[in-house]
Image (tube, rainbow, N blue to C red):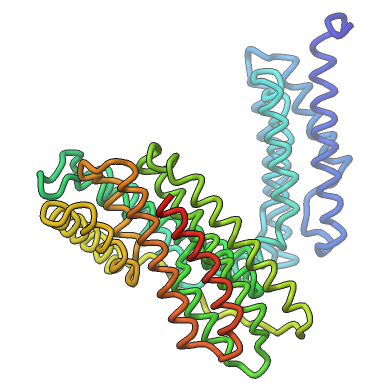
Length: 418
């Protein structure tokens, strides 16, 4: 049936529909903008689309007519823009660019697959409708926002490719590339969490703080929320629930890191870490369920700190190498038992450099040994987070956190021995 319809007619209908859709979107904006600030609406765009279609179809192999029509449209747009500046002191050219896109639809429909024209029209409709959104979004940018982005591009797109893939030596069985790759991955996760917190959830509540903070740093999130529990309006049950949620996200974050650097080890860690994450969410929900009896608190999050600092990246790289050396030394002199003790001790500090040194170096260790060391380090880190929360938080925070973390730590110990 469709084969009997001339191709020119189908293309004519496509140009007509696309032009009309763009014109209708422009008409909607006429309701919000000052009169005379936009160039044309539905009928104007349909006629411009048809003009482009006719001039292209007449001479598809010689584009002189189409180019001449385009120059005429540009001339009209130039006159309109000149008068717009002269009479109304307005300088926006978005509506005129949309007119030129409408005029260019015909050759696009003829020369390229339909999905390309559909994609173009979709982009035009979406982005012309997001003007206010972009205005609001731009107000959230501070003066250093693009410097932050430049830092991430520098460490990931410039420094990383220049580093050697050769292993440093037998003492440090990892390459400079893998060391900096660990820096890039950690920075990327932190940066993604930073962007989501700042631009997607700028007025986030306690639970969102726990979720996103757990991706960034569950220890830092625990400290921040514990201190907030001393406020007069603090709902300690909510805060305790958010702290446990941050721990749930920590399990998933470490599992994701394991998949990036050692998929085989990650497969071994998947069951315990997913189970512990689900258990943490369940414990958090039960604490929140109890907390429903309490009044909701007005939570105002602290200003988010930029996670991309070169000194932080260099410190992470230094700790990565230091833990690789320390792990190698402990394994040579004290064996698996020494590694377990080291894992527990490291848990009271930043576990990421230590765990990534395990994930990337391997040190000739069997998977069960690596998995056990990872679980011990994470369990130790949960214990120190509980101590931080009890030390820095309200006394009302103690009972739910002691119960919640005790359940998680007990389950972790079971996985360690099993």
